[in-house]
Image (cartoon, rainbow, N blue to C red; front, side, top):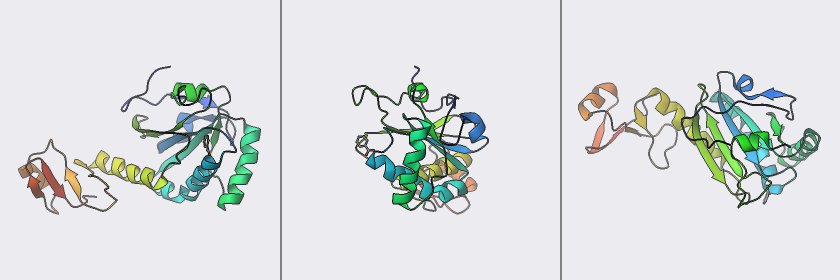
Length: 211
Ligand code: BEZ
């Protein structure tokens, strides 16, 4: 099992899922991707997370992001669990959940942390760019549900900074001022960002959202 690091190519796989056999790269096509793992089916926090992910699907679609979840139970169990999620979260789970009974994908992506739990996955998140490079990794314990607003926020930052020479500051939200990339001299930045550049320190320059 190789350790995955930011910038690495996300490993491809073909597995069974709640929507049938699925090849990760074919599923993603030219989209961005979010692969996120759950400790097990019929667990309370996971139930809220998957329902929330389904409720957020329109927002991920707008950003050209495809979601794919993973849990270490089989497809029959997933099918029953999805009925519960849809009922209690008043939604329709509309993306695949990988049935990773043999831990193939969990091991490929190092989602089992034996000192936390020897068999179940932790709550991992991998954001994959259209070129299949890994852009973000998050690892949460089983006892802490993830924040899907934060995942949307990170996607907004990744997509903005992929196209403009900027970075996003602490607690940034889409549309707010951004940081000029440190590699750009202030004089050049003024030409590059016609909306204006505010020099707070020579190394800290802000500009309105350039998109
Ligand atoms: C849950 O998803 O609710 C959960 C799973 C494993 C441990 C604790 C909580």
